[in-house]
Length: 269
Image (tube, rainbow, N blue to C red):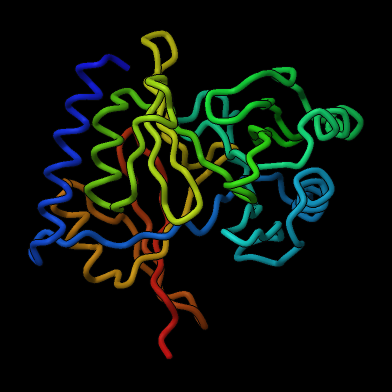
């Protein structure tokens, strides 16, 4: 990312700080809730057990399949419905999980049939990281981060990283950090989970995330009605809204580059 880009980002954040005090421009206060990964039918229980043994968290039955829950969200499984494709070309590249010992976790993944894409090495946001793929094609970054534990981040590769970053700030709010990405990628904090956005190269253009191994992420907002207006102002519309008994209603949308996102609001008292 160039210095000019970072200066432009600073100007955008100054404008963002101003408009948040104006009611007509109020942003949704969004909280990251989950990432859903597609797994072949009949293998979701096995995948959830693998996540738990390797990535920690607490086993839980979540939505369309089992997964693992952390203090700041969950990683869940959903059936691939015969359509899921390799996630290595998806705009949604991977989920970052903070683990106590990257090297030990990498060795466990070797034993349990995962793929080590990068051996443990120094990272941009943590002293030690490794990129791995589970046996079903889900992509993860392991990292040692004692501050942002559990689900550390979700990482996207965008055809226009600056535009996607601005869209996230416009639609979901969040706290932008110039320092964390070290000029390599954008970083935005939602409560205790980071969104990382990297500029995809010309020879690495990504496909929409729906029906890839990492299908979608989820956010919680105070009101779907208010969020709908914020989303429309950004130039996007939900493609599906449906009840979620006994929970709150759900909204699904496809953002920049076809990034698939699920929205919900708190349960009514």
